[in-house]
Image (cartoon, rainbow, N blue to C red; front, side, top):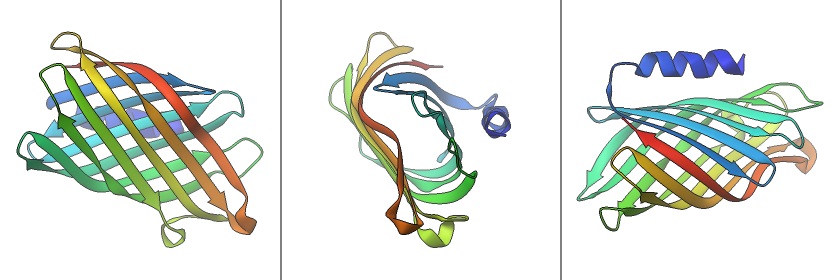
Length: 176
């Protein structure tokens, strides 16, 4: 199911402008991100996999880009599929945004925060949070290297939590 969600999001984005594909690796997790900017809208698809506990989170998102000078703020929502080992598959609609601040031609800092409250979550899921902060170094026009910190956690009834990502990561990105 998570493959189909990611494939649909990628198919929606084909042929549009300003696409970004990146892959990252952190302690016990791997992440893949694809986004595409069409005019003032941003389509995105993400896959986060914790290989130590076999937990997977896949999402597709839609946001509105708001230019703030050289900075870009994106506000939007993501439909999330949370597939945890030894647990039912849960769904959540998270709300939040992304902020990118270019410092120079080569360096930029970025942050992202999305939260799904209990009213936008299924089953026994009471909340879901996914956030990251990092720095990007553009090696050349299409290739970039990322370093940052990511935290992704789901909370269930009785305050039981599943953490998919909590730590530093390194990644590589491609813009086309």
